Length: 167
Image 1 (cartoon, one colour):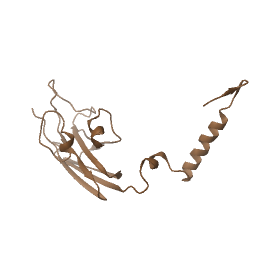
Image 2 (tube, rainbow, N blue to C red; image 1 turned 60 degrees about the horizontal axis):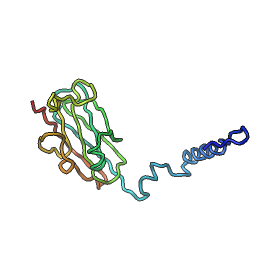
Image 3 (spheres, rainbow, N blue to C red; image 1 turned 90 degrees about the horizontal axis):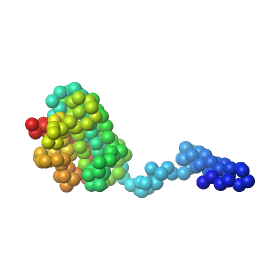
Image 4 (cartoon, helix red, strand yellow; image 1 turned 180 degrees about the vertical axis):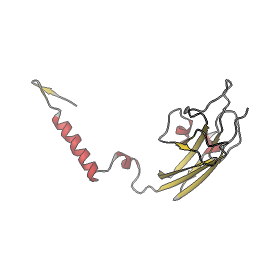
């Protein structure tokens, strides 16, 4: 907060505190807020996602990993997203330092590289798509209960087989 006294700004103490905090963070004396969000003894894991079934290597694979049901069902973009080049009709995505918990994956073949899943006027996908656990096709995206999986070991591997558009 900046405080004005007799025409002078007293922002310097606040700025000095910010500068000192940044220096301590850089030196590792204070934990960062990211580290503070993770319990000290939290176990971290790595995840390898293999996606197969791309009809060709054109365009991009758009893939997202969501932590928890709320993030999965949200319209907001989560922190774990990637656009990957396709090679030989497949992609591989490696992530590390993931907290243990329940996750789900959504992926689609962005064949025309427009950064969105193209759909018909009825809302049906026009591009290949898939979800973790490879649930059967249904109207709309897979339900959380069908796509969720648990990360609770040092390394987890998931393979997703894309579904062709319904029409």
